[in-house]
Length: 50
Image (cartoon, rainbow, N blue to C red; front, side, top):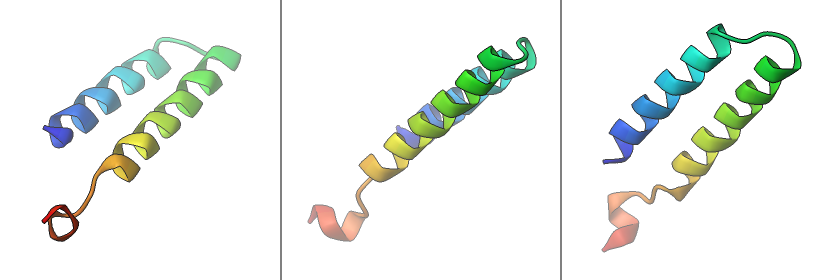
């Protein structure tokens, strides 16, 4: 489930970044980084879940 979320998030942010420029592009890149960081930090290894 999380893998599809990461792939979808990356696809949306790359497409948005390609279609914009300047400050908007920088904000989109910052949002992408924050979103991916939140997803990755929210994941827990299988050994910790048990």
